[in-house]
Every structure is written in structure tokens, then in C-alpha cells.
Length: 219
Image (tube, rainbow, N blue to C red; front, side):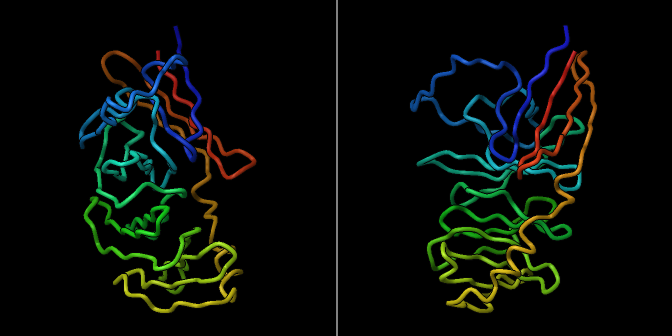
């Protein structure tokens, strides 16, 4: 019998082992930890992985372990395995951003971490204002981080992490809005692999909103 589960991965990526609607959160049970080489497709439970996004045939998503250690994961949809895990200083309200082989992650508190394609930390920084969102100015190689109501927009050099400017106006609003979405991240993708006698198919389907529907089928 063919079984399938639909997952909105820009919001949450949950377990594909069982779609158990009776799942009850127990704070005494440790938040699941994935290790490089683990089979991510069915190991994680219904607490899920957040803000997942596809870039260069990899899925990037973060944990949301309140009060515990949090991680950014790089998952391989071609074989269902974890590529790498990077420690982060808090969970996020927004998916990671990318430029070439650099992954830029920002927590909801404004803790910025950048990783290379192997998951090694390049640099870290801390936004000094209440965080509301971030994006990349890819032309000038800068990370733009803003507060609510555009009171402050800080620019960080993408290569070094150095704070370039801290503007108390909305002059960068249009630039941020222009660079907020990378349409390449919302293309359709299909991956297939076999494991333990089962054939898995992972499909990404762009929706009308800023979400990607991921459908995982196996038989």
C-alpha cells in the first residue's frame, strides 16, 4: 500500500514515520537530536523541524527546543540522510538565506551565524536591536537585519561579519523588500531513493504563498 504525507516545510517539517494525531507533547522527553548520517525521514517526532527551505538540492531547517540547545540541520532529500548539524544560539522565525556556498542563519533574537557548505561556522554576530527579519544584499555582499517599523536597519559584511552601518531610518526598506524572496528557492523539485526495500519519493510543490508543500511518498 502506498502511504503519503504532505508537509509544509517553510513552517514545519515533522516525522514521516507515523502521522499520529494523538501525539502529546511531554516536556520530560528530550527534544530529538539528529546526528550526521542519521535517516531523517522517519526519525524525528511530531515536534518537528522549523523554517525548512530547499537550496541546491539540500533541505535546511532548524530545531525549536525552548530552553535547550538548538541546531541548524542540512538534510539530503536524495537519500534521506543528515548531511550536517550546526549549533545555533536560538530558534528562528525565518528560514535561512544563502549566497553561493554560504548559509546565513538568524535567530528570533538576532543571533547571526554563517556556515560553509560543510557546516563549519564562518562567523557569528549579534544584532543590537529587537530583531524583526533579515535578507541578503547579494550584489554588495551584505546581510541586512531590521527591526519592526523599520526603526533600525543594520548592515553586516557577509564575508567578515563586521558591522558596516546601523541606520535609524527606512532608506533600506525597498532594498530589503527587493531581496527578501529568491524565486529559485521556490522551484519544483523531485527526489527518489531506495532504503530497506522501500522506494521514497520527495516532491516540493510551490504554493501561492511563501510556502513550499513537501510530499513524501513510499511503498
